[in-house]
Length: 482
Ligand code: FAD
Image 1 (cartoon, rainbow, N blue to C red):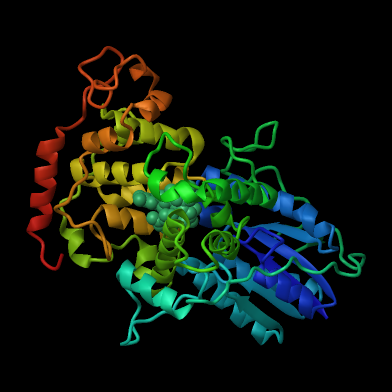
Image 2 (image 1 turned 45 degrees about the vertical axis):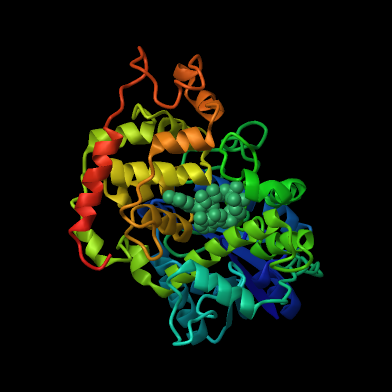
């Protein structure tokens, strides 16, 4: 029979559950990718993440072609148009079974439900696979059958449940006998063409890779992702000790690849298990710590699947909507541009703007600065991150922002506000990171760089850190249920 794999943020050949299932159970197999630039823009997916996705798709197309699996590309404006388009595609390509890996944010789930219903009504077999996470959301529940809302018990239950389970990655799909029966392109209704040429860019998305194929310094694709994973294996043992220091290259930098699926979560776990005696607690401190971070990703994805309001810009703790958030466009701009006059914040924001990525410690620092010191609505920061991050992921980003803003479940307590100057001295002691991204401060000594004296060409701090901290705490203290 003829099958179709609908690719989304799972852009790899290896260990791709839907792709593997499709190849196992069909005689002929094609793949389709549906770009929805307007919906993506409406949910704040920015140029870096979309351009990276498209570039990974292009690499994957070649690898699929080697296995006689043609990849079709369709561009339509919105998710709402997908079910109809999909009905037409499967009809014209004479497809009998559709395979896809599940996605968990609310809009994506609704889109997929509509596609499932439409195709089942048309008599197709439809299979949505669990692939993005180690266990499907909902699989780990409290004794009372509830979703875990706190990370540590979630982690404990997760590890107990999968103690010695081995999340073995799947092999790549088999080579199909032929691709000869698949047309080069077909015309769909409303002037939409289903084509086998992936465009260089999409409307509204101008960013493209440079001459060497890199995007903001990142090499897209499954092969590049595998190289990152191999390189990180060499240093995983030091992860627990070094991961908090942004000047060091001590974390895996796998997030862009994990996010668009160029690397799978099981490949990561397999590598870490191999370095850690085959399981969660084999005594390799670095590997254990890293596995814990992978479980944060798991935790936030399970949460977003369980609580649709997290996809809707709502705080997990409803009472926090009564915080008197500020909507000061000028202050916000200084934060976005890295001109707040607080060096570690400015260096971090410039790292984001220049590379599409920010070190985790600094994500916490700048999010705390925006939401506590500037008391600006966390949703402004969440949105800016979505627009600028090459690893923008609704679940992890929303989780991180609500954690920092103390609006989420298992958040930082509102009375514990990061002091950016102490964070800077502690985690960038010699000012190496600041010097890298804030050239105006390069000449300053290790002592002066964290909180510089008035300088020509560098702004004075936009707020008094101690005073604004007290104001933030007071603003939260009046609320109930925190
Ligand atoms: P490593 O330290 O090597 O960790 C390995 C992987 O574990 C990461 O690639 C990521 O998939 C996962 N991970 C690690 N920490 C976390 C975490 N706290 N929450 C969820 N997953 C985690 N991560 C994203 O992938 N996309 C986002 O949009 C995103 N937004 C964030 C916003 C804020 C305010 C904060 C505080 C954190 C955010 N994170 C986000 C989580 C984390 O900062 C990044 O995953 C990490 O910095 C990526 O670098 P790495 O791949 O070198 O991570």
